[in-house]
Length: 89
Length: 320
Image (tube, rainbow over all chains, first blue to last red; front, side, top):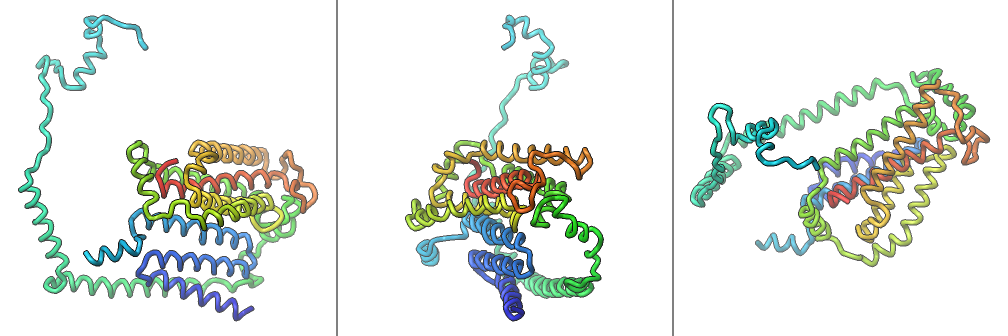
């Protein structure tokens, strides 16, 4: 169990660094989602299931959806075909 | 409508004179002033072109990294200082953390008479098996009241920032809304049809069982809101607006907040601990057991689920 906990903490660090280093904003949001998910597992291991449920619902669910919606609004999410066209131009 | 007055009488009234003076058509010293409409601001195409060229040359000069040594130097210094700043911040935080007491140690400052009372007598006093819920909805219900109001205020702020009132904007928003999304996606719709009822029921279970096990108003409300968002994504606004519009949200949120405030301020004014409620403390473990906690959980759940859903709708379309 100790090893599992340490592994999760390492995952958390990797996710946190990957969020800030990723060039693609959509990728960083998805990594951030997994960060929240790992965090909720850690909350369960720390014996606070209340927080785990909230973290899974708000952190991994609603916040990420709001981020993705915002990305769509600022036209950051583009279809692949459109991207190729942009490159040709 | 007010009663009709002949024109000559009306022109002698003070309000008419004041209105004329306000609009500038009549001056007490110069008598009637002839008003000329202002000329529209006009810029010839040549001027516009010139301005654009100027702007472009400025931008080119500023971002020309190969020849502009000043910008290059600034960028280098900026990078170095940002790294130094981050390292300093990390160092300060680590030093701060190193002074924290050891996790779970028995002589920690948190282990005082307050937590002893919560753990020892929480079950008798609040009737909630889940001590956390007993704490946040009974001993510290005032905090939770503030939290729900913070959520409501957040929704109001999002409304102020993102709401689109005019019909014209709403139509374009509706058009922009679905550009990159598959309309009536079969996979999404099938999955949503299966999953949404379970998500909603699980959310309701988490809300209602807040005093029996892990959960409570906030987490359950968030789950319900997430289920609603999934349903909206799969089936579109036409279906969700049959049962959830802006008006529903207003009624729901206001009703829940008012219910919470009335139920709890009553207890604050009458001396906190001993209030009579419809639901008795009863036997621990039954759903109808822990006084007001069930009611308050439902209120918080309503506020949170409505807030989550409204956030999503506002971000996406800017109005119901």
